Image (cartoon, rainbow, N blue to C red):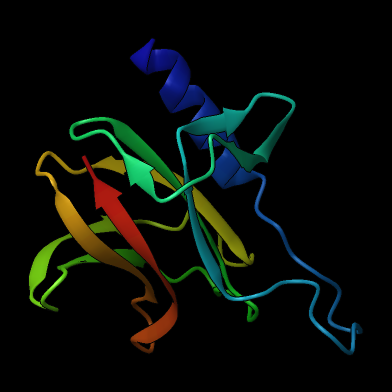
Length: 134
């Protein structure tokens, strides 16, 4: 099962999204969403989208940037409800262009958090979203 999950996530990373440089408006937005899995017919879509998850479960995320990520490493910073840092997860971007990165992480502790999607190159915050672990 882990091998299949790794293969699926690897394919998602390799299929990155890009847009033509001639577009005058971006078809992408700055957003961070969470889900319980990936849609097998479209690996750029999350299933079970929400912000409340069971402790220890795998939480899939989709970070979308209006601007091209330019191959930047992505950091998901998890802060406690009081704003203090809880944990962070770092994900290597598999290609030098694209607007979307999908992967997963797990939070073992019950609580209310804020997740922040950051492009490490330039230390740019893309989006944030509340996250509750029950």
